[in-house]
Amino acid sequence: MKVILVNGSPHENGSTYTALKEAEKALAEEGVQTELFWIGKKPVSGCIACGACRKLGKCFMDDIVNEFTAKAAEADGFLFGSPVHYASACGALKSFMDRAFYSGGAALRHKPAACVVSCRRAGGTATFDMLNKYFTINCMPVVSSNYWNEIHGNNADEARRDEEGLQTMRILGRNMAWLLKCIESGRREGILPREEKKIHTNFIR
Image (cartoon, rainbow, N blue to C red):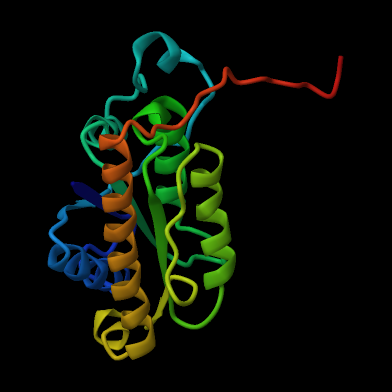
């Protein structure tokens, strides 16, 4: 079993990284393999709704998004981390997830996911709600903890002093491992999700 932890922060080793690393430790203790995936500092273009991915099987912009979706096909679960920018996810991660889910959503479908957010003071729950919507539109079980998945601190040092936030991340990691093991047990018994063809209803005829 493998979980990819996506760091959407422009700071490779900042507060968001600190939160993801705490969850990663718990996953490792439960025997789950992990990979930290930093989207980097280069600009990430948003989706331009061209539809090319339907023909190509990937986004025509061959960048970090396609690198991730290729890895996602072999992964069993995901954690997406973002700093809070204006009570929302950072722009690069938003663009990244728009394109990853639109062009490569099949590689993530039915796999457990969660998000973690880091903030200096406020805006965490708004960002948390926003990111969870990607999972619930793509048939992905959302993993929870004992509180909303937030850590507080203006930098990594401050985040490491947020004891409750760190505990939230550890419990999240253990809950992710538990759900992955339950899914694996169910798969061995032939228990799999039932699919239906998507129905698209437009309100203007």
